[in-house]
Length: 103
Image 1: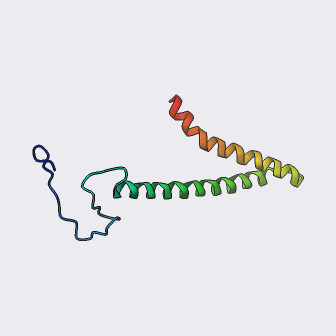
Image 2: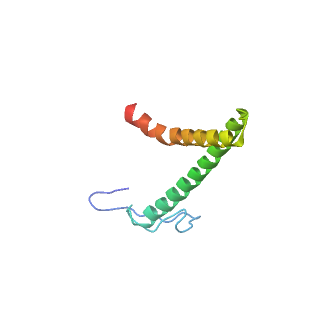
């Protein structure tokens, strides 16, 4: 809480304080401070995890859909699998940008 000009009330850390996980030593939020580094690490970890999960789900879905089409040769199956994977990944990746741009 702010009291007047330039006075900042400091609080004691909570009883269950784990440094860098539940409480931080910085008095202000900065990009290169411990909060900024923590948020960067968490964002990068979550982004990589979600991207890997998304790719694996897309592979499984497209393979199953291509198997249901009963292609007569393995060459046609592989060709259609690549097309399906490309279309699903392209649509899932760029649809968000198109929706933001035009909605």
